[in-house]
Image 1 (cartoon, rainbow, N blue to C red):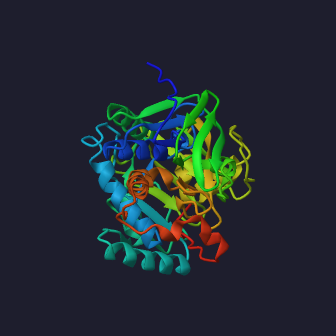
Image 2 (image 1 turned 60 degrees about the horizontal axis):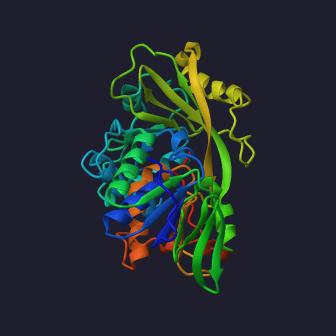
Length: 385
């Protein structure tokens, strides 16, 4: 049954990826009535469905560590709350390091994670090869392993949150684009959509790579830039360990994890230009091949079966934007996650719920307010690829 657009809502969430559906679920679970989520395409059809599915708390920033740890616990319990099988594989995250500076950086972030209760540890190159036999150790000087991390299925997470949100009374409307935000002074009066007008006093932007456009409708600057990232999936790779970790060559950003009998492979392309480039391109493949030849040469003879392109939502310091706008009351946002939005979705849903309800979240997200870029208060996340 297709939901119709209500005439009024207590809160309108813009964006139907993992962030938007998590927020809808957490608000509805907390008893907020008339929760409305609008998505211009289909649920999870934006960046979420194109994500690699990695989940971790291995970050260099204490705030990101806290959000990651909280989310890992939520993913572990996802089958009970909200109630959905997400094919979670807690096989660990393995970062391969090629310089002394990289080792020093990960030693520091490991200390931060250990202080928060995380089991991340620095390991030798020999142990890294034991964990991921595909890799060539040439040029490596160390590694970092987080045994509690892993990967799961992004679409299943969206389905779980969306189904539970609807069960709890939220309304989710797809094929519905927000075209204007009506406000008088500091007060929101409603949103105009492609399906009609909705009276509301609160808007939450969870529009991912499209958030700058949504913010502009409200006169709010959200410095989010879209950047294409591509993924390929290989044919069967004989002899893959069942517990092969999510493995990242930090120098090149080349990464892989098991996907059925093969591997899901990706890499950040340094020559990619920002923009809404949603189509697949083969231009990056020579650079991917070069990284594979150096780190996993045995994979060069493995065929590719599929692939796709998606969008990262990049901020200037590679950290999220979470908060409430100063310029317009009750305009909240959760966006700009720079590649780690999927894995932080559960925790951020809790945070936005609490900000909406006027209570203190489990972690202080004040440093992630968009105003930091006006006050030289940025906080760069280093453990990103």
